[in-house]
Image (cartoon, rainbow, N blue to C red; front, side):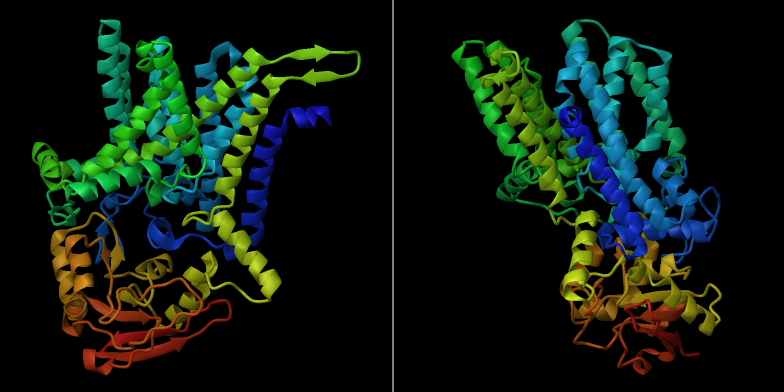
Length: 594
């Protein structure tokens, strides 16, 4: 029993992984998986690559958005992509989630061990819990592994600086297998460049080993993400990036965005630091620097690693906000035209790691305070614990609370929470929750039934009332789709199809014209007609499209969740109505009249 109590942190970590595994593998495709920028985006793209056997193909097109080069989709030389190549998509998603946690925990422990040195063993409990907290953060699912591996690249750079070795250069070269260049890699290279300059000034000699490390990592990015570099640097087609508008904020809005970035983060990088980690770190920041000032040791303020972490958080939040200052953004785009439309404020993606690194440092110092003030009085049978152990207990309690706060938060990407909630709701209420499960969202049996009845043979189609991803996942070629990087000319051609809807809803027109990544068939009366819910209802059953423009793009079918009341008026006729026991949808398929 004493051994179990002593290893409480191992039990929590192993217990969480076991629980998550049992839930997701036990529930299977009845799990509730987040839709936004997930089921409606990357999962469908991976399934398309699987359907068309295109993971390693060259010179081929993916069958959406009228035909997109396979090079515009994720590289095959990525751990996450490999999972989808090797496994059925749902299980690849779940294994990716579990691997994300394991990689984050292992990377955090490596970094903590390197930072603490020989005294690491006494900090193991809070190192494990801080690493677990970071690992279970419900961040952007498709980039969970790149988030998780940030501590690893910091560890590699630290080791490289102290003991340059071929193995560390090799590890940096292969690191892009765990990362993604445009979201993380370019920023990591920039941070390394900043470290290179700072170390040069600090040591008063050129840290050549860091420079070679930068070259090794850059080389790995180019090799493992060669498709991305080919499209970005060698592609001549004008893309929708040229017409994307990020917005132009005033001073007040920029400052507010910076403050929100610091206090809340952003939804793709939900760090849940607002309610516990941030207050603990801010209070410690005030106490720490007050102590330095009280002791007249101002120099110590600038050499404390905790203050450096807080400075990085401020910097990340500053860049997150200043991105919306149009003159500043124009300067960046003028200096480097390939960055036009690229969100260089993704520095905020690194803040979750920095928050939990700072949190670990506070917990570690609570342990140190406990050790320095501990009073132990031994008798033959009893151990009296003084003030010192209270600080350790406080650190342990804070670390557990951080895990619980993340686990019990119903945030957008907390699939484990939403799946457990749905199962509990079904058990207690005797009916299913309103959210659609993974299997229901894609409803593969229903679409196979429809395709067989229609004699579908790869003709171009579009979705109405569905995300186009539902069709794409089911092997249906779509003229519509969701992608942040495709041809501007196609965007303009597709706009001709949806112009009747855009003219009726100015907000949709602005949304499409200033961004355009979601090339959907829009409603002519509502802002959105796609929702992964069971009680789906719409007030307007008309579709607002230019039928001739749809046919001009090669369109033949529209797969609709809505029974259209004006199909004949836009050149459509009902080809079939389909239902299937396992699906919540009623599927109406319309075909273009000859």
